[in-house]
Image (cartoon, rainbow, N blue to C red):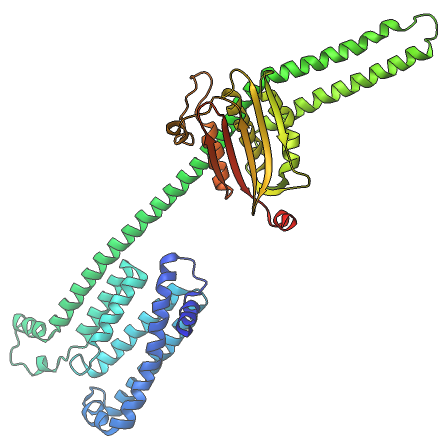
Length: 470
């Protein structure tokens, strides 16, 4: 538990770059280790082997023992401070600066130490290797080669030229060969090989990261395009349903106009010259009231059709499914021919669900349309609503021809249909099933040939409605 909290704390840094954020945990641990190791090691060496260090290390330095001791202590102090400063910079989100100042401090301290003690008198080879790999992995390829050039220069400058001064050879070629023999070629070539390996690794990792980012962007684009396509598909389904409703709406509106015309003919009963009798006034009032009711009915049908056909942005909301089905009754009735009866069995009280209301209306109209197509000779379509645990069960049943098992197993597949090309696209039930699954529900079909079909839609109740039902 404690280690998990520590890892979480180390990972919780305000670093924007994803690669730097992944490297931050390791880098903090390394800086903590170096910030504690360097002073602890120095205290231990001075306490246990102080005289030995002075005689065999500081006394052999080029610049004298006192100066060598000062440089050794000073460089260790600088590296310790740099490690803790780097840790602080990472905690505040300055990862590149933290690594750069630590690498730079280590290189400067290495240059000073090599100049004071010489290449062969120090044991800092592992430190230079660490700094070389660290600069490449944390700062990139450019920093890697800058660090290698700096380390190569440090190694060359640390060469002890005293043997050249004592050499009896005075001609230039011999001096060049002698200088070459003094160079730490093994270290230079080893560092070069390490730099090449790290460089290739960085290049491969960066290329892989770039490809991953590109695939991520492409995937995000494909998801957005799929969402747009789904929205267009839903709207197309709505417009298809609107087209099928058009004839029924026209018939209903035509009936409204017939009622209006019939009532308006009452004006012929009015007396033109004399004041109309009281009974005629009552008949006119009744006619005007009938005209108003008929007009309101026609307006309600047209408004519901317009609201249903508009292109909404999908947005889930909490609404009463009982109230929604009551409002949808006129359109459901218009979806059925005169030879088909519509029956609605709704429970008392509200049943709240979390769903996109326009998509819910589309699903119901699709189910009623399928019931209509299953009853070419007429029949009864029943829309029922009942409680089912934490769900509300919406059932749309018909007394039509039914379907065999082979067809029932494929009805949710997109573009699967047994209808003629001019009567269906095979998307209705697929769209309904997809919407219900997306809302956390499920769809079940029960059907037998000659015994009709029942489509059951389980929709999860909202928390408020679930408490009320319980």
